[in-house]
Amino acid sequence: MKVVVVGAGYAGAFAANRVAKKVKGAEVTVVNARPEFVERIRLHQQVAGTGAVATPLGAMLRPGIAVRIGSVEKIGDGTAVLDDGESLAFDHLFLAVGSTVRALPGTVPVGTWEGAQQARAELAALPGGSTVTVVGGGATGIETATEVAEARPDLRVRLVAPEAADCLSGAARRRALAALERLRVEVVADVVAEAAAGTVRLGSGRELESGLTLWGIVAGVPDLAARSGLEVDADGRVVVDACLRSVTDPRIFAVGDCAGVVGARFGCQTAAPQARAAADALARLAGGREPEPYELRYAARCVSLGRKDAVAQFTHPDDSLKDGHLKGFTAVAFKRMVFTGTRYLTRKAVGA
Image 1: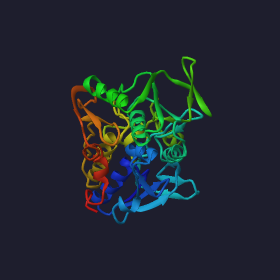
Image 2: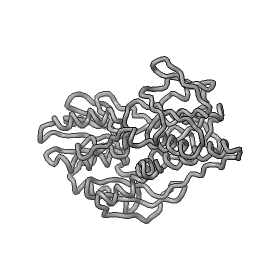
Image 3: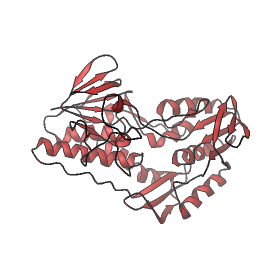
């Protein structure tokens, strides 16, 4: 059985490892744009220069998994066409291309590896006393703002969002806002309408100085599925059945951010369980059994607040917020809790 996995983020790497482990005789090929696995939920550390977040794919994938560096231009009729013109035949394919960032011109996106690398270089070159503007009040924006503020206390850091920390509620949100205040991050309740060299213009019409403007909003998915003729939802995500198979082509599984699962949010907490469920579904099919449906379940929302603080708010399985929250993590404890998806991908965890 030939299995192609498109993308080697949390969903793709997990799926490739589990298929190689669970499906006897599977020939697994991973196609990825770069030769490293990137811990996307730690990109704020890459930006601030407080951590390295890339690991060679060879250290993350089981022996015997083939790796092709490149991108897939189109999928169809059991074939994946690569950007170099070569084609890979498959019996089954896992689409795990993740999500994308649609940044405003004049800003640097921090939700992608390339953007984080650019932001890191520009931040390092920024002289003391300059202002960094972070756009977005969700987890990505808050983590970027607090990480930069702690790593570079010589800079002025500003967070612009209609509502900061609106991904949390109650005591958890108050804690996040208190951390921003403690780290002297200015919170501006507005939107950035335009960014140019040295300034940003807000939706209210105000113009503010900004030596570097970072875009901390992740939205949308790559259009590979749509341009390949697979049915997608209004957000461009693959419409899937209960077992995460494309309703257009059941040979194709969609996992992670690009899968159109109702109620799913972007993140490794979605990617790893979906990859596991889809790989197990393929293993059952290979063994002549019916696959089991995927069940969406969440436990918490976690936000880093610099290297020495974080907050996690418990959720119901459908991701609606509970009142309870955890606080006062050390950086190590937070890493152990939030980066579960990464631990599952390590060679030891997958029995490589």
